[in-house]
Amino acid sequence: MIEAKDIYFSYQRSALPVLRGVSLEVKDGEFVALLGTNGAGKSTLINILSGFEKPNSGKVFINASDIANMPAERLARVRAVLEQSFEPAFDPTVLELVLMGRYAKNCSLGNSDEDRAAAVECLKLTGLDGFSERRYSTLSGGEKRRANISRVVSQIYSDSASYKGKNLLLDEPCAALDPAHSLLALRMAKKLSLRGASVLCVLHDPNQAFCFADKIILLKDGKVCASGNADKIADKELLSDIYGAKCAIIRTPDGFPAALFS
Image (cartoon, rainbow, N blue to C red; front, side):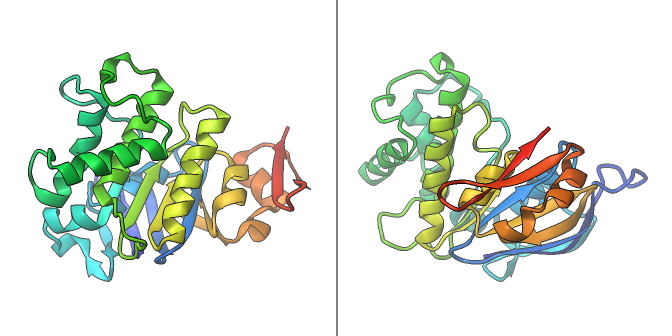
């Protein structure tokens, strides 16, 4: 479970706040999508929820524990984070990259049979089985994104049925991915939430959020301006205001709302 209470943050004390009184909750087994325009504060919020940045005020709790008081090793075992970008300091194979995520579990180089088996399973989740020996530098942008999703999931990977108590923060997982692989990544994240994980996912496409999210949070100017399920957020006036483009709402054959911008 992830909880933020009244988060304020600015990069310089004298600067205008990037986040202004943000509160949210992602329950066990819940997939929450975070939407907003560029500069709305989404990535900054992910960094604060992850513990990478400290808020000027407010608190973040993971599994009911204040992350400000959690040792890094303990935090790493219960939450994993997909950053907007990640470049390793050397040129690993894809398998070596994914094994980096296992360090949080055992604080070793992650070369046990168990770790290697977990890494292979995580590559299968993103459709990269067969890429284990490829060098990271030889991958396309989309393949690198998928490899990093595998790395992050390997950090909290479990071969048991339950992911309860595990927390996954994904900052634009679909960046550089084609439609088919975007769906693969989102279905994987949804599967983990159905098995008990708390999943918070930054998305740019409202329609992806409408299809996958149990709850959608809209950020504007560093504040939560709306929160609710797809039917509540799929409001043409609300989305037109958020994105600064005329919006129409239709229904897909599957019954999901879809936003069309012009």
